[in-house]
Image (tube, rainbow, N blue to C red):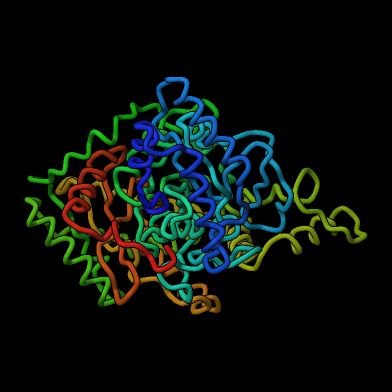
Length: 486
């Protein structure tokens, strides 16, 4: 069996049965990364020795007759904005070059307790600000389906690693679509949980009221498996919610008879690329054939999502990134300067262009005389967007939309036009503003590039969302297709 294309649940089952060792699976993953990294650039840092040690520990556990944890031996790529004790964590930014956290993020601790083998830190847009993974200070990640195209962002390294066979599963973070959009571009599954479902402790903050950690995987069962491992209340994160964590895998019944699907008219209009429209419409028709019902719904305030997001997210980023001043950790200018000039030079040298752009937008929106006109007003409209979703869910169980209005665009195609880059997230941003769970699921191709269906559910109803995704997946082969670099 080719362990670099097998889903994690099959890998774990094979290790438990003694059909393969965790070391052999990890070695296959590392060898695959050595082969494709020159073309794809998924990773900023590969943890080969550490990964093999973790794999050996899993094998020793099995040899001793001990029960294996649910992710035992599954190779995992970790987005480089999640802290690992003693491992360089840069957020793909020069300003954090060389920083080694003295602690683990809660999700890292939970994953390793579940037996996952972290094989490397994945590339990303700097501080998660971007939609293409072209904003990394270190390298541009390429799409495994066509290396002349982007993998999406900001979790592009995580999505590309799974699509290229370098890791069975990955973790990303999603502030405005940064898990779902790259999942769609790379033909994998990506889940953004309800805000508060997963601890953010140890996640380097971009926009604290929007950020959420979630899985990128080859199939829906792996997504449920990973979500089981990382969900739950964490006393170290005051925004994590104390709600019960169901067994998400148990929700994968394959049955969607009687499910009502809402189709928001606002996300099927102008700007939706023809191949994407055809793939998503075909997916909706498949649901009808499976016994679900599709109804038209309206989300009138959705048209304000993009401007609202690009006020709130940069404002929170401006506040969060003020801590990078060259005093306590990270980059510090080596030029002679007084204190104020040291701050300015450090930030000028350490931050990239997109991060500077968003800091400036956010600082303006929060400045005296503009706070009420911009930030406060954006928060008020955010409430109206959430109410639109509430009203829609009175009529349906889930919403289904394109994940992105376009397939993956070319490397360098949109770097000179930030607004066109931001439009790639127009379908995903509203979900973050409302704090809802959403996921991307492969549903076809536009030309040779993957298309993703987005499924949105009620707060903390990931079970219904995953059930709907799994039922569709069982009747198609999109998730089994392998990228040319995968």
